[in-house]
Length: 142
Image (cartoon, rainbow, N blue to C red; front, side, top):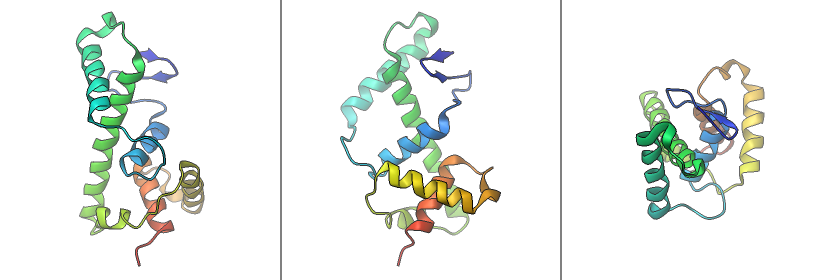
């Protein structure tokens, strides 16, 4: 299915998932500035998502809340998976991520580019884990 500029296949993965997951993860950790979502907007967005899932091709509502909910939930799921993976390696994800100060999305983008250029051997690793590792390296706990 094609919704705007994002291609979503049967499994719900996207071509642009790296960019979207990073934005979702950043919003979850309050690193970005600006308005935060709340339960009311989450409910509205996810109700639209459920309606679209139930109605399929017959759905005639806006795709923005559908995609917003799906990507937000996917971002949460992927962040939990990365936290569990790091925990298995003896790294306390939640303790380490607390050391990251409030910085802008642009600053994080620069840190990620810098980290990935220094560690090309890790380019095959998951996108979210690479953002997290870039932040942990840039802001080690003291």
